Image 1 (cartoon, rainbow, N blue to C red):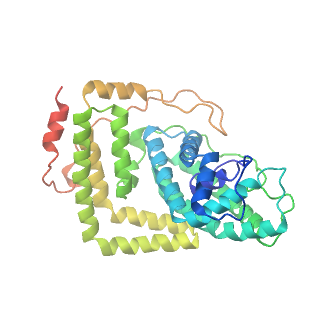
Image 2: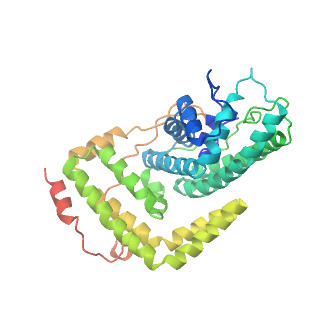
Image 3: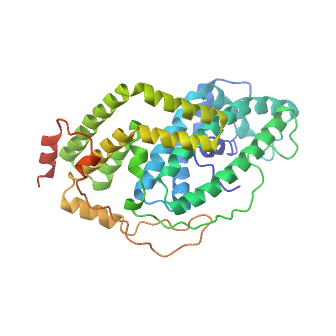
Amino acid sequence: MTMRIWTVLGVVAGMAVMVVPAGAQSEGNNDAEKAREFVYRSWPVDDMIRQAAENVARRYNLNPEQTAFTRDMMAKRVNAFLRDNEDQIWPVLRDMMRYQNPNRKMDARTAQRLGRAIRPIFEEAQKEILAANSEWRDILSDEQKKLHDYDRKEMEKTFQDMDGRFAGWASGKVGNEQGIFPEERPDTPPVNPRQPKPTEIPTAKVLGTSLEWWDGYVQAFIDDYELEEGQINAARSILKELKERASAYEKSHAAELKAVEEKIQAARRAKDVKKLDAAMAEKRQASQYKVQLFEELKTRLDTIPRLAQKQKYAEKIKEFRWKNRPGFPDEPVAESASPPPTTAPAAADKPVPTTQPAAEAEKDAKKE
């Protein structure tokens, strides 16, 4: 099948596709830590996350900012899922890996054990994937969303096929279906999305909603512009200040934000995509102040790099494109995706200014 399940399932299930080398641990050993070490030796999770994020970026023709967010999101979501389910997931993955070897047949008793063990994990993975997709789609352009709508429908079909397969295992039925994924279906994407310019996508509306993304954005900014020590200190000082202001807002609006989060979790448990999308939109509406703070973060960071650093970065992404994109023919180089000009936002669109302890650091960083 085409790997469209781009968050937790793509990485977690993908690990179980590996053929286990000789000397594998016995199935009876359910020690989670030993099982985790074994799985990591076969295929390190961090490497899989990077590869999965790159596959998504290629398929959707993401621009640099979208790509950075996607990598950060996948790393956080996948590692959190593995951490929250580590006692169950590592032993199951280790044992499932053994039966991806076509020369090793799964008997009915083993199939029952693995099927019953994997179904609850798979159920939780589906919920996580749906929630992550509802959040991720907001950084996409209209063209990219058309592709995402298609991929989500295909993903639902794959969920059904895989759950049916695991249910068969749980009842002791294996047949020729001891592999994790169902048979491949034709991939007929409805659109070949062009790469959007940074000004065309509302990444701030997504990144601003949750503070968990801010550190990754600042680190990517530091790496992109190759900031020096003084500039890095200035960037992190700005981040610290604005996160404190955002945290104060969250505390003062805790009841409102909790009510929205409960709607998200209810839709997540029900695996209701429409309600989940609506709840995520409500969360963004309730987080407008944090979005404004994130816009301030971006504006103030933009003052730190010197002209030469900005020119070097603009040149680096001038012809940023994904070649040999899966499902699509190669296409001509798109227009330059150079960063938008730094402009001060209108006063009405920004939070009331407060003291800025990073101001001096910002001034020092701008000196040649």
